[in-house]
Picture 1 (cartoon, rainbow, N blue to C red):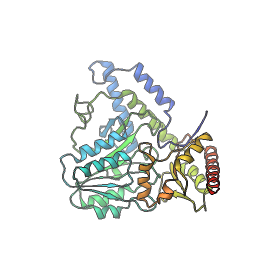
Picture 2: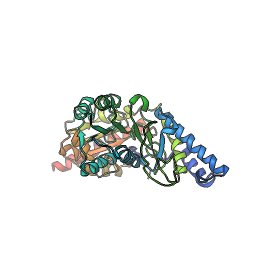
Picture 3: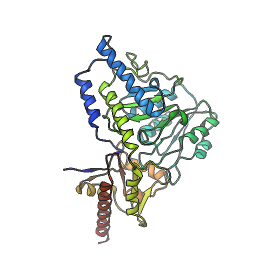
Length: 377
């Protein structure tokens, strides 16, 4: 069965060019980049080239990129190495992806002063709210760039200024997974110290991620071993994943420049406009790539299954956590339990088109209307 796929925030289809690169480096240039002979040295050069390409998208330099197994590892890397042997408090938003939120909860369980900041009702973290929590002892801050639940974009540059004003030495990390290649990102202008990205959200293969670490920020090694990646993360590099990542990211960014995600998002907003039993979660500045819709009195799982029966795949929120846990983000925005339980997440990629969005919006309206009729009997 051919599906209309609208769960791109969970993962994306590997691009054809990225898939060819994976096969090439698995079968042809399969050499260990740590070996000393010429073919291996050439692979090592290719890895550096890929680092430069990823860095270029972020406004960074290749030497500031560490390749990881995924964004979850990148986030854990940032927390483990950014806070190690440091004293002081930590600030994290309550709308973070589970891989950041659980890192913060682990620190809290160890007795570290972790301070959580809630978004406003539109889903944004406000600089003034961060400033109210920060002080001269703030050591580490992690705020998501673009919400994986609602698509809302935080004003990271202003948030960083608010933090640095209170604590100039604080390390600032940003989960940039849902922003990478979708919205313009310059880590230097943002003023951040670390930024996490993932390959499989932009047409690359699963099992590959990266962490930008600002030059001059001296962190301990995350994984000890043979000294790969300048001893910052030892272990033989995932050459297939790294090479395909750079190709996929470049392709995705180019495709995104000609794609109007807001146009597809607005089709759903207009379809349910004026319905008091339907809530669009998040408003204001957003990427357009993600829309969270809640239906009062319904169950998100049932809605998603109904959509699947019609050949349309949507999500229930973060694919890295259960639906109950994903409601943590909506709850922090003030969304009631009655609405949150009926939430689904629709997310786009440049491969989606207007016709697909119209078909999906019509199907969603039909399914939810039918469910309400059944409930009224």
